[in-house]
Length: 91
Image: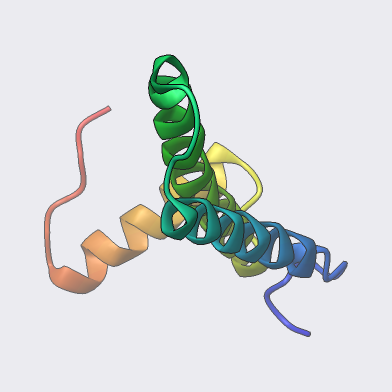
């Protein structure tokens, strides 16, 4: 596949993101049962699953796009700015 950096490991990021999202939705739908003093921990755990899912999906997107370093991301940003006709940033 072109654009995946040649190794295709981005599928693992997609699987990890999906698993975190499914676990978060399942925990959210199940609700909370038990001692009320543990409610903040449960809420934090569910929120962490959703945030982790988004972060993992974004990391997988970057890896699949062939962006592996900050310099690669800077090149993408400058090409987008050039395409929009925005003057380059001063370093």
